[in-house]
Amino acid sequence: MKCISIVFLILFFSVGDIRALSISSVKGSQNKKDFEFSKTILIKNIEFKNGFLKMPLDGYKKKKYSNIKILSKDFYYKISNCFKEKKCSVMGKKKDILIKVEKIFPLKSPLRVANANISFDAELIVVFGIVKDKEDKNKIWISYPKDFEIRDEVFKNNLEKLIKKEFSRTLK
Image 1 (cartoon, helix red, strand yellow):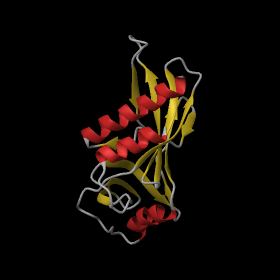
Image 2 (cartoon, rainbow, N blue to C red):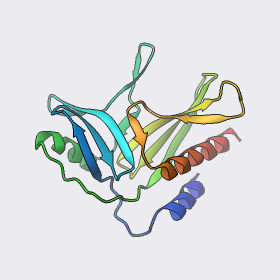
Image 3 (cartoon, rainbow, N blue to C red):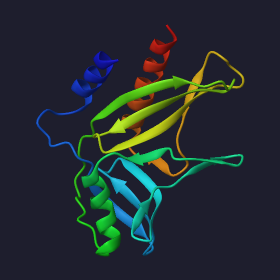
């Protein structure tokens, strides 16, 4: 698993950059905003309620799932300050993002066969679903949390390839 992550980093990221998701744009109301990070990742519907950040939840049937989680205090404060101070320090340029497959764990569902926990710059962790295609059971695709988007197609394709490759390794 480490080899794949290292190869991915060597191929797609420059050496020497400071790793941190930077806020590249913010839109929304006083208590709910959409944040774009490093001109690559968009997280919609982040709320600020009773002095605390509330990340968006996914729902399935009657259950709620927290598929987008903040890992670092600095990142938490960076986002919460946008709500508290009503302004953000927006960085206009695109930055490289360090990604890591933290864990892939199988599920009992016949369609959503596994979840993949992926960290971004050790500041954010996102749970992606690994889903079998209904028509072609040998084909899989990656599902995203409903309020999470990757806007850079090259980054998105490479991330999905990495998740699929790690998933196939866990099957062996």
